[in-house]
Image (cartoon, rainbow, N blue to C red):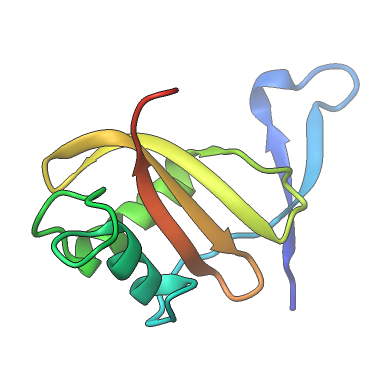
Length: 124
C-alpha cells in the first residue's frame, strides 16, 4: 500500500530546490461505526449530547456534518504531528452546526479512519 507522498512547499523554492519532505498520505478520512474507544461510537458516547460524557458538540450535530467537517479539517487544517507518524492529528478553526471552535481530528493513516474528533475550548 502506498502510504507516503512527497510534499513540496512552493513558498520556499530556492537555489537548493526548495523544501521537500516525505509524509504519510491521508486520503479521504472516514468516520467508521467503531467502538467506545474509537470511531463514531466513541465520538457519540464521549463527546456529544444528550448521552455523551461531555457535551462538546452543539446539540443536533449529525454524523454527516462531522464527516464533512473532517474532510475540510484534514485537507485545509494544520497538521499537528510529525508528517511520518502513522496517527496524524489536524486542527482547524471552523463552525460546525453553529458552534465556532478549534476542532481536532485524529486519523489513522493506514485505513484513513477517524479515531476521534472534538472541539477544543480554552487554553489555546
